[in-house]
Image 1 (tube, rainbow, N blue to C red):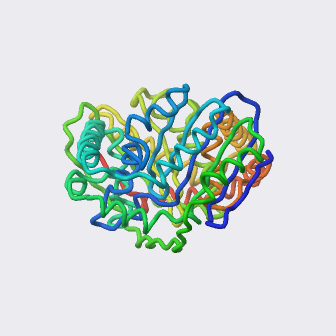
Image 2 (image 1 turned 90 degrees about the vertical axis):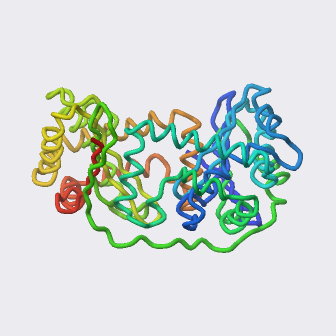
Length: 406
């Protein structure tokens, strides 16, 4: 894969991958998210993402919405713990239209008061909707337990109490403090010559005023395992257990990815799915997740089951942990696990929007994108001993935290 890159004097970087298609995708990644909020700013990063769609110096909200929809395109955004992204999909001839719109929203939003008041209610409804879905809310509550009072442990949406306090000055201050141009990457995938991409980027991104303040994030505190049971009056019992895990720079990260995929990845043949669903019929949904950030990470296993099955499900989860901690994978098992992960990655990259976002985030964080061959090489380098060592570190019963909704 041949990636084309460029950097403007203001620090904004560009990465482009050309591939044949009538449809193109692009996005602007900003290295600022919910963990960069002060305690009294909880939820402001996500609030700002919503407000990008509510008016600029030259567009009202309905003009922003219709700018790409009028030509069959789409524009969207999301807020993460450490990043914010505005992205779009469109016919390749509408590339400049999309780029200009993203730039207008990011750098020229005016945050009108009436839209602030209206959008507060929209996000409060989003929060309430989220709270009605215990299978989603439990992940946020679990992160708060694992990371205790660290900013990275707070949920992204914020709280109604905080949202009602935010004003336009708070928003401008957060953007000024966190939206640094040398922490921004514009990413695109499509059948566009790189000279064309640069020509339009020079017009819309190069004039952006430089804002370089340096990214300093508060380090996470010492981890102490904890267990909680909360009453949620749900039909099912929801349970999540896990541990802090490796950050995105750790050499054990790829081993952790392979281990997570073996244990509870997206395939029906994942060990936890076979143990809790296929062989026992105890749970409809069981999955494991590994997420890494700049200086920490988290691993978790989630399942939902009938109230009288929770102890049996717990036993099976711990049993699978024990097998991985004490029994080395055979060469055939390891080969199969690696091949499965490679196939999943290849299928994921076939989604051009996913590919655009993946290369953008990688370039933002590492200032490089590993070619497919290098990623496969890292997967192949993982040994059965590596997996056993990581399993003993991450899946140690004495290091696990647990949260149960009952």
